[in-house]
Image 1: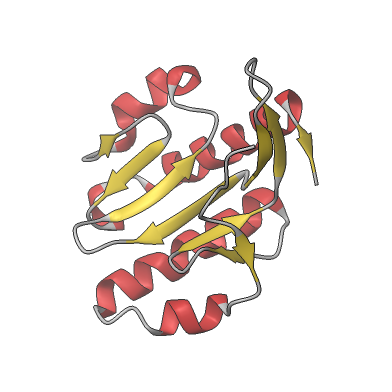
Image 2 (image 1 turned 90 degrees about the vertical axis):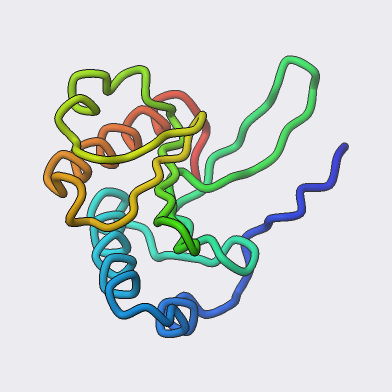
Length: 140
């Protein structure tokens, strides 16, 4: 089995948030943390040194590879905030059109600031993604 470098650990989420130097990014990260707590009902945990994750799901690929990963999470990066929408974006096409200014990867939503997006729509996307993940996977 391949080793997954980024793992859930006992590092302090509070310390991570306090260490975000840019005041605006720190405030945005705290707001996203609150949104995710509301969507999951979970206590945040650090995954690696720079990802705040909520909940855990068990995945198994057709190849037999399996592991555990967060249901949702976020990270404050130099260029943007990264919101992890683990279900992907296919189910949210209409919402994504109304979200605002962002970029995406496979399950990463890149936002420069929360002022660039409609936070009510972001909250809805997070909540629906969490619901989908809990329907699709064994969760803890």
